[in-house]
Length: 388
Image 1 (spheres, rainbow, N blue to C red):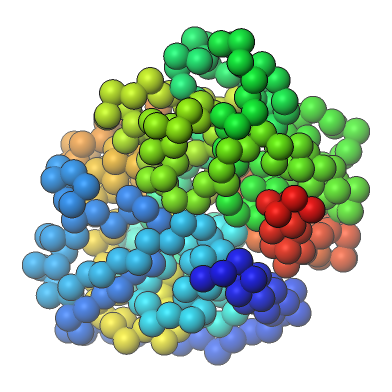
Image 2: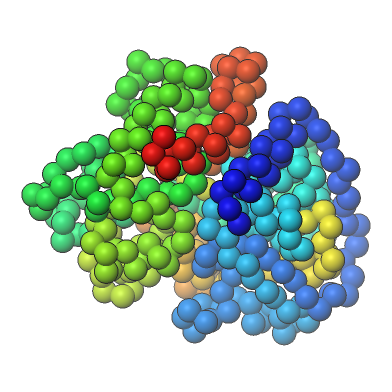
Protein backbone atom coordinates (compact mmCIF):
# COMPACT_ATOMS: atom_id res chain seq x y z
CA UNK A 1 0.00 0.00 0.00
CA UNK A 2 1.75 3.18 -1.18
CA UNK A 3 1.58 6.51 0.62
CA UNK A 4 0.06 8.04 -2.54
CA UNK A 5 -2.74 5.44 -2.61
CA UNK A 6 -3.49 5.93 1.07
CA UNK A 7 -3.52 9.71 0.65
CA UNK A 8 -5.98 9.48 -2.25
CA UNK A 9 -8.33 7.21 -0.31
CA UNK A 10 -8.16 9.35 2.79
CA UNK A 11 -8.90 12.50 0.84
CA UNK A 12 -12.07 10.88 -0.51
CA UNK A 13 -13.24 9.74 2.92
CA UNK A 14 -12.35 13.04 4.57
CA UNK A 15 -14.31 14.96 1.96
CA UNK A 16 -17.27 12.69 2.63
CA UNK A 17 -16.99 13.58 6.29
CA UNK A 18 -16.74 17.29 5.59
CA UNK A 19 -19.70 17.34 3.22
CA UNK A 20 -21.90 15.39 5.59
CA UNK A 21 -22.52 12.41 3.31
CA UNK A 22 -24.69 9.99 5.26
CA UNK A 23 -24.18 6.37 4.18
CA UNK A 24 -26.94 3.82 4.46
CA UNK A 25 -25.96 1.78 7.50
CA UNK A 26 -27.52 -1.54 8.44
CA UNK A 27 -28.04 -2.83 11.97
CA UNK A 28 -28.18 -6.38 13.28
CA UNK A 29 -31.35 -7.40 15.09
CA UNK A 30 -30.45 -10.95 16.11
CA UNK A 31 -27.28 -12.96 16.65
CA UNK A 32 -27.47 -16.34 15.03
CA UNK A 33 -25.10 -19.23 14.49
CA UNK A 34 -21.54 -18.22 13.67
CA UNK A 35 -20.44 -18.39 10.07
CA UNK A 36 -17.19 -20.15 10.98
CA UNK A 37 -14.80 -17.32 10.15
CA UNK A 38 -13.88 -13.85 11.38
CA UNK A 39 -11.25 -11.50 9.91
CA UNK A 40 -9.93 -8.59 11.95
CA UNK A 41 -7.72 -5.62 11.07
CA UNK A 42 -5.91 -4.79 14.31
CA UNK A 43 -3.03 -3.00 15.92
CA UNK A 44 0.02 -5.14 16.72
CA UNK A 45 -0.49 -7.02 19.98
CA UNK A 46 -4.26 -6.59 20.10
CA UNK A 47 -5.39 -10.03 18.94
CA UNK A 48 -3.11 -12.63 20.56
CA UNK A 49 -3.32 -16.43 20.33
CA UNK A 50 -0.16 -17.24 22.32
CA UNK A 51 2.25 -17.14 19.40
CA UNK A 52 4.32 -14.27 20.78
CA UNK A 53 4.00 -15.39 24.41
CA UNK A 54 2.02 -18.53 25.42
CA UNK A 55 0.70 -16.71 28.49
CA UNK A 56 -1.28 -14.29 26.34
CA UNK A 57 -3.98 -16.01 24.33
CA UNK A 58 -7.55 -14.74 24.08
CA UNK A 59 -8.27 -16.13 20.60
CA UNK A 60 -8.07 -19.92 21.07
CA UNK A 61 -10.84 -20.06 23.68
CA UNK A 62 -13.07 -17.85 21.54
CA UNK A 63 -12.56 -20.06 18.49
CA UNK A 64 -13.47 -23.18 20.45
CA UNK A 65 -16.60 -21.70 22.03
CA UNK A 66 -17.90 -19.86 18.96
CA UNK A 67 -16.71 -22.02 16.09
CA UNK A 68 -15.38 -18.85 14.44
CA UNK A 69 -11.81 -19.14 13.11
CA UNK A 70 -10.02 -15.82 13.58
CA UNK A 71 -7.56 -14.36 11.09
CA UNK A 72 -5.73 -11.10 11.75
CA UNK A 73 -4.23 -8.46 9.47
CA UNK A 74 -1.89 -6.19 11.44
CA UNK A 75 -2.05 -2.50 10.50
CA UNK A 76 0.65 -0.08 11.59
CA UNK A 77 -1.20 3.24 11.27
CA UNK A 78 -4.78 4.46 11.34
CA UNK A 79 -4.47 5.51 7.72
CA UNK A 80 -3.55 1.96 6.77
CA UNK A 81 -6.60 0.71 8.66
CA UNK A 82 -8.88 3.04 6.72
CA UNK A 83 -7.30 1.96 3.45
CA UNK A 84 -7.62 -1.75 4.28
CA UNK A 85 -11.25 -1.41 5.31
CA UNK A 86 -11.96 0.58 2.16
CA UNK A 87 -10.39 -2.00 -0.12
CA UNK A 88 -10.30 -5.30 1.75
CA UNK A 89 -12.72 -8.03 2.69
CA UNK A 90 -12.44 -7.72 6.49
CA UNK A 91 -15.12 -8.05 9.17
CA UNK A 92 -13.78 -5.97 12.06
CA UNK A 93 -11.23 -3.24 12.70
CA UNK A 94 -9.81 -1.94 15.99
CA UNK A 95 -9.98 1.71 14.94
CA UNK A 96 -8.50 4.65 16.81
CA UNK A 97 -10.29 7.98 16.99
CA UNK A 98 -8.46 9.42 14.01
CA UNK A 99 -9.92 6.64 11.82
CA UNK A 100 -13.33 5.82 13.28
CA UNK A 101 -15.25 8.90 12.14
CA UNK A 102 -13.76 8.59 8.67
CA UNK A 103 -14.92 4.99 8.50
CA UNK A 104 -18.42 6.03 9.56
CA UNK A 105 -18.62 8.92 7.10
CA UNK A 106 -17.18 6.82 4.31
CA UNK A 107 -19.85 4.17 4.73
CA UNK A 108 -17.35 1.45 5.63
CA UNK A 109 -18.80 0.43 9.01
CA UNK A 110 -22.33 -0.22 10.25
CA UNK A 111 -24.30 0.85 13.28
CA UNK A 112 -24.08 -1.74 16.03
CA UNK A 113 -26.98 -2.91 18.17
CA UNK A 114 -25.74 -2.71 21.74
CA UNK A 115 -28.80 -4.70 22.90
CA UNK A 116 -27.16 -7.72 21.27
CA UNK A 117 -24.03 -7.30 23.38
CA UNK A 118 -24.83 -8.58 26.90
CA UNK A 119 -21.68 -7.09 28.44
CA UNK A 120 -22.25 -3.56 27.10
CA UNK A 121 -23.18 -2.23 30.56
CA UNK A 122 -19.74 -3.18 31.91
CA UNK A 123 -17.99 -0.65 29.63
CA UNK A 124 -16.46 2.43 31.27
CA UNK A 125 -19.20 5.12 31.17
CA UNK A 126 -16.61 7.58 29.82
CA UNK A 127 -16.35 5.41 26.70
CA UNK A 128 -19.91 4.23 26.12
CA UNK A 129 -20.98 7.34 24.21
CA UNK A 130 -17.56 8.64 23.18
CA UNK A 131 -17.73 11.00 20.16
CA UNK A 132 -15.24 8.98 18.13
CA UNK A 133 -17.73 6.11 17.69
CA UNK A 134 -21.11 7.72 18.48
CA UNK A 135 -22.84 9.91 15.88
CA UNK A 136 -26.34 11.34 16.35
CA UNK A 137 -26.91 8.95 19.23
CA UNK A 138 -26.01 5.90 17.13
CA UNK A 139 -23.13 3.61 18.09
CA UNK A 140 -20.75 2.35 15.44
CA UNK A 141 -18.47 0.19 17.53
CA UNK A 142 -17.52 -1.37 20.84
CA UNK A 143 -14.74 0.20 22.96
CA UNK A 144 -11.67 -2.02 23.24
CA UNK A 145 -8.62 -0.39 24.88
CA UNK A 146 -7.17 3.06 25.52
CA UNK A 147 -3.93 4.69 26.56
CA UNK A 148 -1.35 7.44 26.02
CA UNK A 149 1.40 7.83 23.47
CA UNK A 150 4.45 7.70 25.72
CA UNK A 151 8.02 8.94 25.41
CA UNK A 152 10.15 5.77 25.42
CA UNK A 153 13.81 6.24 26.35
CA UNK A 154 17.03 4.38 27.08
CA UNK A 155 17.81 4.48 30.81
CA UNK A 156 21.56 4.21 30.20
CA UNK A 157 21.41 7.52 28.34
CA UNK A 158 18.75 9.15 30.52
CA UNK A 159 19.54 8.43 34.16
CA UNK A 160 16.44 10.47 35.02
CA UNK A 161 13.23 10.48 32.96
CA UNK A 162 13.17 13.22 30.30
CA UNK A 163 10.93 16.05 31.42
CA UNK A 164 10.15 17.32 27.92
CA UNK A 165 9.42 16.06 24.43
CA UNK A 166 12.16 18.44 23.27
CA UNK A 167 14.58 15.48 23.15
CA UNK A 168 12.83 14.32 19.95
CA UNK A 169 11.85 17.72 18.52
CA UNK A 170 14.92 19.95 18.96
CA UNK A 171 18.61 19.45 18.27
CA UNK A 172 20.54 19.02 21.51
CA UNK A 173 23.12 17.00 23.37
CA UNK A 174 21.58 14.28 25.49
CA UNK A 175 22.67 13.50 29.08
CA UNK A 176 25.44 11.18 27.81
CA UNK A 177 27.05 14.17 26.08
CA UNK A 178 26.22 12.99 22.56
CA UNK A 179 23.90 14.68 20.07
CA UNK A 180 20.38 13.39 19.55
CA UNK A 181 20.91 13.50 15.76
CA UNK A 182 20.24 10.08 14.29
CA UNK A 183 19.29 8.67 17.70
CA UNK A 184 15.60 9.53 17.87
CA UNK A 185 12.52 8.51 15.90
CA UNK A 186 9.13 9.93 14.91
CA UNK A 187 5.83 8.25 14.11
CA UNK A 188 5.11 7.54 10.46
CA UNK A 189 1.58 8.89 10.37
CA UNK A 190 0.03 12.32 9.66
CA UNK A 191 -1.58 12.31 13.12
CA UNK A 192 1.95 12.96 14.46
CA UNK A 193 1.35 16.59 13.46
CA UNK A 194 -0.85 16.70 16.58
CA UNK A 195 2.13 15.76 18.75
CA UNK A 196 4.03 18.74 17.38
CA UNK A 197 0.99 20.96 17.97
CA UNK A 198 0.68 19.78 21.55
CA UNK A 199 4.35 20.56 22.13
CA UNK A 200 3.76 24.07 20.78
CA UNK A 201 0.70 24.54 23.00
CA UNK A 202 3.04 24.39 25.97
CA UNK A 203 6.08 26.20 24.59
CA UNK A 204 4.45 28.83 22.35
CA UNK A 205 1.15 29.78 23.99
CA UNK A 206 1.07 32.92 21.86
CA UNK A 207 -0.02 30.70 18.95
CA UNK A 208 -3.34 30.22 20.74
CA UNK A 209 -3.64 26.49 20.08
CA UNK A 210 -6.52 25.05 22.11
CA UNK A 211 -6.63 21.60 20.52
CA UNK A 212 -3.81 19.83 18.65
CA UNK A 213 -6.44 18.54 16.18
CA UNK A 214 -7.91 21.97 15.38
CA UNK A 215 -5.21 24.13 13.81
CA UNK A 216 -5.61 27.31 11.81
CA UNK A 217 -3.14 28.11 9.06
CA UNK A 218 -0.58 29.85 11.29
CA UNK A 219 -0.72 27.15 13.96
CA UNK A 220 -0.48 24.43 11.34
CA UNK A 221 2.54 26.09 9.70
CA UNK A 222 4.30 26.29 13.06
CA UNK A 223 3.71 22.58 13.65
CA UNK A 224 5.08 21.69 10.19
CA UNK A 225 8.14 23.87 10.77
CA UNK A 226 8.83 22.02 14.02
CA UNK A 227 8.45 18.68 12.25
CA UNK A 228 10.93 19.78 9.58
CA UNK A 229 13.46 20.36 12.34
CA UNK A 230 12.63 16.93 13.74
CA UNK A 231 13.27 15.37 10.35
CA UNK A 232 16.94 16.41 10.56
CA UNK A 233 17.23 14.42 13.81
CA UNK A 234 15.22 11.33 12.97
CA UNK A 235 16.90 8.03 12.14
CA UNK A 236 13.65 6.41 11.06
CA UNK A 237 9.95 7.18 10.85
CA UNK A 238 8.55 4.14 12.61
CA UNK A 239 5.23 2.44 12.05
CA UNK A 240 6.06 -1.20 12.71
CA UNK A 241 6.22 -1.81 16.47
CA UNK A 242 8.63 -4.73 16.13
CA UNK A 243 11.03 -2.79 13.91
CA UNK A 244 11.08 -0.01 16.49
CA UNK A 245 11.87 -2.59 19.17
CA UNK A 246 14.81 -3.81 17.09
CA UNK A 247 16.00 -0.24 16.52
CA UNK A 248 16.14 0.39 20.27
CA UNK A 249 17.97 -2.89 20.82
CA UNK A 250 20.42 -2.85 17.93
CA UNK A 251 20.46 0.45 16.03
CA UNK A 252 21.33 3.00 18.71
CA UNK A 253 17.92 4.66 18.98
CA UNK A 254 17.51 6.11 22.49
CA UNK A 255 14.26 8.15 22.46
CA UNK A 256 10.98 8.19 20.58
CA UNK A 257 7.27 8.52 20.92
CA UNK A 258 5.95 5.00 21.30
CA UNK A 259 3.25 2.74 22.69
CA UNK A 260 3.38 0.90 26.01
CA UNK A 261 3.40 -2.33 23.97
CA UNK A 262 6.99 -1.76 22.78
CA UNK A 263 8.05 -0.60 26.24
CA UNK A 264 6.73 -3.77 27.85
CA UNK A 265 8.36 -6.12 25.34
CA UNK A 266 11.72 -4.39 25.66
CA UNK A 267 11.54 -4.50 29.44
CA UNK A 268 10.64 -8.18 29.31
CA UNK A 269 13.80 -8.68 27.24
CA UNK A 270 15.81 -6.98 30.03
CA UNK A 271 16.60 -3.97 27.87
CA UNK A 272 17.41 -0.62 29.57
CA UNK A 273 14.09 0.94 28.63
CA UNK A 274 11.49 3.04 30.42
CA UNK A 275 8.75 5.49 29.45
CA UNK A 276 7.24 8.71 30.70
CA UNK A 277 4.65 11.38 29.91
CA UNK A 278 6.60 14.67 29.88
CA UNK A 279 5.41 18.05 31.09
CA UNK A 280 3.68 18.91 27.81
CA UNK A 281 1.30 15.98 28.25
CA UNK A 282 0.50 13.36 25.65
CA UNK A 283 -1.79 12.50 22.80
CA UNK A 284 -3.43 9.12 23.05
CA UNK A 285 -5.77 6.60 21.52
CA UNK A 286 -9.10 5.11 22.48
CA UNK A 287 -9.72 2.21 20.15
CA UNK A 288 -13.10 0.89 19.04
CA UNK A 289 -13.89 -2.41 17.35
CA UNK A 290 -16.08 -1.60 14.32
CA UNK A 291 -18.05 -3.84 11.94
CA UNK A 292 -17.62 -3.64 8.18
CA UNK A 293 -20.79 -2.58 6.36
CA UNK A 294 -20.29 -5.57 4.04
CA UNK A 295 -19.18 -8.09 6.64
CA UNK A 296 -19.72 -11.70 5.55
CA UNK A 297 -19.51 -12.96 9.13
CA UNK A 298 -21.63 -10.59 11.26
CA UNK A 299 -22.74 -13.29 13.70
CA UNK A 300 -19.14 -14.20 14.48
CA UNK A 301 -18.45 -10.46 14.80
CA UNK A 302 -21.15 -10.01 17.44
CA UNK A 303 -19.87 -13.03 19.32
CA UNK A 304 -16.45 -11.37 19.33
CA UNK A 305 -17.93 -8.08 20.53
CA UNK A 306 -19.11 -9.72 23.73
CA UNK A 307 -15.97 -11.82 24.05
CA UNK A 308 -13.73 -8.77 23.85
CA UNK A 309 -15.52 -7.28 26.87
CA UNK A 310 -14.86 -10.30 29.10
CA UNK A 311 -12.87 -9.03 32.05
CA UNK A 312 -10.18 -11.71 31.78
CA UNK A 313 -9.45 -10.72 28.15
CA UNK A 314 -9.54 -7.04 29.06
CA UNK A 315 -7.29 -7.68 32.04
CA UNK A 316 -4.67 -9.71 30.17
CA UNK A 317 -4.66 -7.37 27.16
CA UNK A 318 -4.18 -4.45 29.54
CA UNK A 319 -1.08 -6.11 31.00
CA UNK A 320 0.23 -7.22 27.61
CA UNK A 321 -0.14 -3.84 25.90
CA UNK A 322 0.41 -1.62 28.91
CA UNK A 323 -2.92 0.10 28.29
CA UNK A 324 -6.24 0.55 30.03
CA UNK A 325 -9.24 -1.76 29.70
CA UNK A 326 -12.57 -0.47 28.46
CA UNK A 327 -14.09 -2.54 31.28
CA UNK A 328 -12.86 -1.00 34.57
CA UNK A 329 -13.71 -4.15 36.58
CA UNK A 330 -10.88 -5.89 34.73
CA UNK A 331 -8.47 -3.94 36.93
CA UNK A 332 -9.74 -5.39 40.19
CA UNK A 333 -11.85 -8.54 39.82
CA UNK A 334 -8.89 -10.92 39.69
CA UNK A 335 -10.11 -12.83 36.63
CA UNK A 336 -6.96 -11.94 34.69
CA UNK A 337 -3.42 -10.74 35.29
CA UNK A 338 -4.14 -7.05 35.83
CA UNK A 339 -4.36 -5.32 39.22
CA UNK A 340 -5.59 -1.97 40.45
CA UNK A 341 -1.97 -0.85 40.82
CA UNK A 342 -1.21 -1.92 37.28
CA UNK A 343 -4.11 0.06 35.86
CA UNK A 344 -3.04 3.12 37.82
CA UNK A 345 0.47 2.77 36.41
CA UNK A 346 -1.03 2.49 32.90
CA UNK A 347 -2.74 5.85 33.39
CA UNK A 348 -6.29 4.86 34.32
CA UNK A 349 -6.63 8.09 36.33
CA UNK A 350 -5.17 10.25 33.55
CA UNK A 351 -8.11 9.95 31.15
CA UNK A 352 -8.87 13.69 31.30
CA UNK A 353 -5.21 14.59 30.68
CA UNK A 354 -4.93 12.73 27.38
CA UNK A 355 -5.83 14.40 24.11
CA UNK A 356 -7.24 11.46 22.22
CA UNK A 357 -6.66 11.05 18.49
CA UNK A 358 -9.46 12.42 16.38
CA UNK A 359 -9.84 13.33 12.71
CA UNK A 360 -9.06 17.01 12.01
CA UNK A 361 -11.73 18.83 10.00
CA UNK A 362 -11.95 22.33 8.57
CA UNK A 363 -15.24 23.15 10.30
CA UNK A 364 -13.93 23.37 13.85
CA UNK A 365 -14.48 25.30 17.06
CA UNK A 366 -12.54 28.25 15.65
CA UNK A 367 -15.20 28.75 13.01
CA UNK A 368 -16.35 27.29 9.72
CA UNK A 369 -13.41 26.47 7.43
CA UNK A 370 -11.01 27.92 10.00
CA UNK A 371 -8.98 24.75 10.53
CA UNK A 372 -6.76 22.77 8.21
CA UNK A 373 -8.58 19.54 7.19
CA UNK A 374 -7.05 16.10 7.43
CA UNK A 375 -6.45 15.51 3.73
CA UNK A 376 -3.87 18.30 3.90
CA UNK A 377 -2.29 16.71 6.98
CA UNK A 378 -1.83 13.58 4.86
CA UNK A 379 -0.19 15.24 1.87
CA UNK A 380 1.89 17.71 3.89
CA UNK A 381 3.26 15.06 6.25
CA UNK A 382 4.36 12.99 3.27
CA UNK A 383 6.16 16.14 2.14
CA UNK A 384 7.85 16.61 5.51
CA UNK A 385 9.13 13.04 5.50
CA UNK A 386 10.34 13.55 1.94
CA UNK A 387 12.26 16.68 2.90
CA UNK A 388 9.88 19.32 1.56
